[in-house]
Length: 113
Image (cartoon, rainbow, N blue to C red; front, top):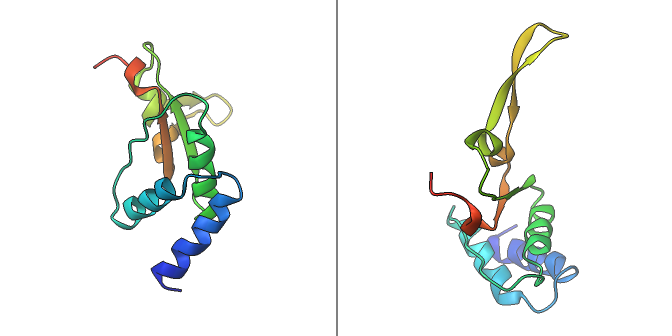
């Protein structure tokens, strides 16, 4: 399967969930191909989260969402080490940054630390 066929299938899958965002889906696919990042800015309630979830499902990737707040800690993003009392050892609980498609919501609410 070449990229044109792949992108057509992804666009069809996403179009079943989100209507009228063909240009945005195209740009998301370009970013995916180029190993890049995308900043989606739009008014609330337009479907940015639904779009990201639909894209992740279409390309069979894991999806996570970070809701930025003023009290967000680095461990909330990267994960934490915690002590498992049953096994008597430390374990690492992965944060949302370990997903393949990550939605960072309300970045403007985060503190600049």
